[in-house]
Length: 156
Image (cartoon, rainbow, N blue to C red):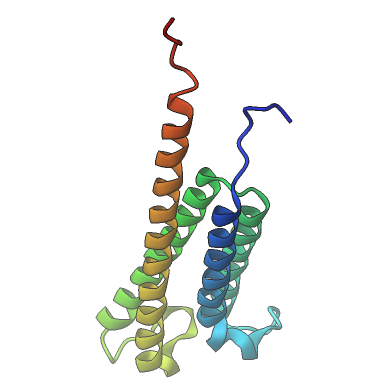
């Protein structure tokens, strides 16, 4: 590797591991209602969507661990922001659908529980998005400060 190549220090790697652990807990919590529907052939549509979003998040968490950089943490923040938006939309649909109308995706029998669960996953995903964004911006600023001195012409 070139001498000026980016290498994260131990503190950043430790932070990244704790962040990945927290994100994995958020993903596990978000899949809790779908655990009894792991057979995708017979699972209701909402369980398939939940498991698909969890698989997407898990893939990006593993990728972030494999490429410890501010940009990978930023991408994970964007993924969790997307998932938070999906759960915000689901919360709004569950709350706004009249009681005499059927809920989409087979959520009819879980109306009250679905609203609470979607809202709680929304809050956790928003928190995860904030943490990823905060860490990413801090790391990028530090990298910019470290590299600013290298590109400056030396005074004689």
